[in-house]
Length: 294
Image (cartoon, rainbow, N blue to C red; front, side, top):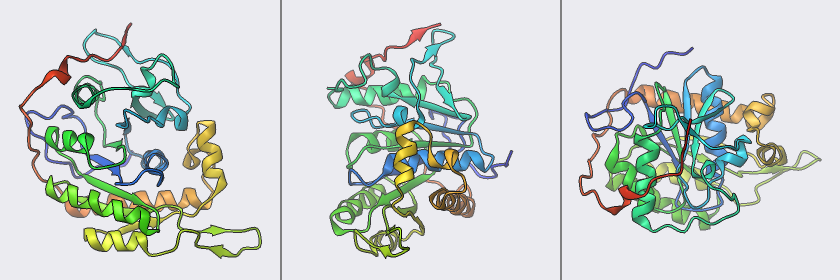
C-alpha cells in the first residue's frame, strides 16, 4: 500500500478525523461528467494503492449506485454508526442506497439535506482512509457550503467541458471556493474530443475551456478526457472504466489525472485552511436516514 505523507487540517470538531484527505469533485454546471470523473478518480486512486471512499453528496440525483452497480441498504452493527457499502475495495455511501424506490424523487428542503449530509459524515463508519472523494451536485448552493463549514477540506477538483456554456458556470464554482477557503487542486476537462473510426480527431465542444478555468483558478489542468462510448457502456453496467478496461486510453488518462492530483496534494503538504465550524444547528438534524439495524 502507498503511504500518504500529508494530511488535511483536522480540528477537534471534525466529523471524520480518520480520513486524511477530503477531495470534492464539483462544477457549477450539470451534465459535464462529475460523477464519471469522481467514480473513476476513486478507482484510479485505489489502483495506485490508497484506501479510498466515495461519498455521493448529490442528494437529488445520486449516480454512484448505478456507476458502481451497488444496491442494498446499509446496516448498523452497533445501533450508532452506519456501515458503508463496499465494491472493488472502495467504501461507498449514497442516498440512493436508502431509497425504497430508485425512481422516486427526493423532495427535501435545505435543512433536511443539511441533516442528511451531517449523517453521511458523522454517522457513517468510514474508518481510516487516505482519500474520501465527494461527488457534489451542480451549482454553488447548500452542499458545498455545508461541507466547507463542517470539516477541513484538502481541496476541490473542478470538472468542465470545453464550451463556454459550461465554463461560464464553472467560473462561479471557482469563485465560491475562493470565498469559503476551499483550495482548487486542479481542473479536469471532460469530453475534450472524439476520434472517429478513420482516426480523425473532432473537438465537438470546442477547445481551451479547461485551460481557461485552470488559469482563472491558478491551478493546474490535471488532464483532458476524450469522448469514448465504452466509458458510458461500462458505467451503465456498474463497473467504472478504470476497473473494467485498464488498457483503455481513457482509463490511462484517469490514472495520469490521479497521479497529478497526488503530486499537487503532496506539494501543498499540510498547508490547508482550517474549517469554519457552523454551530447554528437547526431543524435539519432531526431528519434521520432510514438505516437497517443488524
